[in-house]
Image 1 (spheres, rainbow, N blue to C red):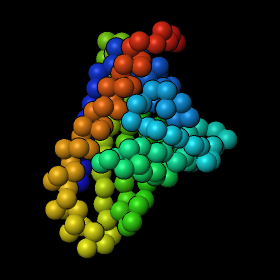
Image 2: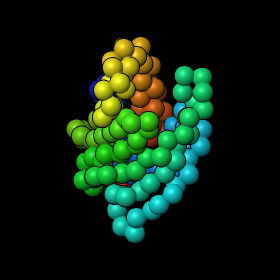
Image 3: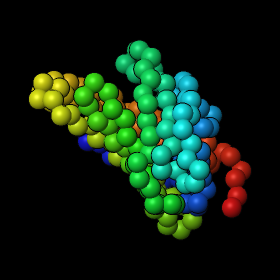
Image 4: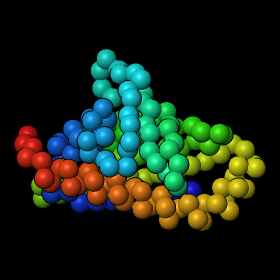
Length: 153
């Protein structure tokens, strides 16, 4: 399953980057996150940052261990999570135009297991819509936080 959702935010790219990389404070910005605990903080940059994120998904509380695998400062970063044979990769990327920022969240899930791929192909149809709504809500929350917060460079 692959999805991509974007959102225009009325703030400069450097401010949006600062917010989306301040993962320790996501619970203050993203309403879907119930709890977040940082497990490992790199000495420099964000690659290697590892955390446990807890959300309520499909009526159940679920926690995932996630970590940042790649980043280009101010442009994008990739996160990875693994659960029951499936690898989840999310890319957060930014583009700036006219003092506004286009924030894009792309998400994919792949599996090594033929059985899991088969089940995912069936369930993916039903889950994809819910995943798009969740990603859209996260981006709406980030936009709302950024635009109501009086942040400056």
